[in-house]
Image 1 (tube, rainbow, N blue to C red):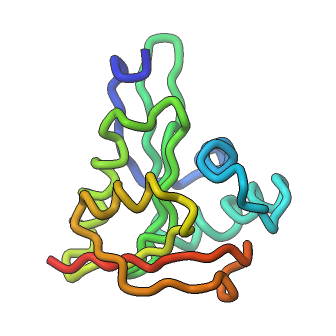
Image 2 (image 1 turned 60 degrees about the vertical axis):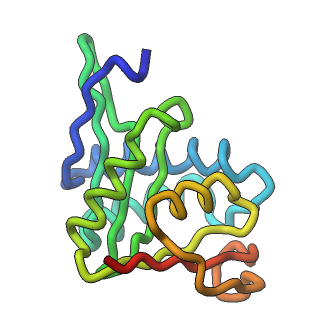
Image 3 (image 1 turned 120 degrees about the vertical axis):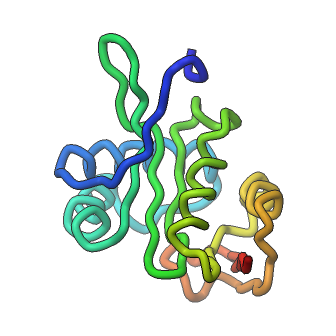
Length: 157
């Protein structure tokens, strides 16, 4: 069972990390946001992780440790004070892993954090609000690649 495995949060550093993180992102996006049209193909997402997010951003992965294997089950990307990405493998939702990522983000950004999430993603709104984030801006989506209405959240200590 997913909740019986130990999970380590660590910086993503290798092409294998980029590949695994992109795979988690794709699975999570499809499960959490089925009505949102992705502007990038799977290959473009893999390339973005490989050439931009892992080498140029502060990218963290959650790696499950299990006998006979394990693997990357979550990804978080920080860009300065912005929590730019937080995605979990669908079977790992609700097990506290997202809480650990947010705690790490707050540790890495002690002056405060901001993030964007889609308006249709009500579970994400509840999650971030539970962690002290406050909705401060709503848009029609004209500023994001998906053209999907979104909301900006801010956390201040």
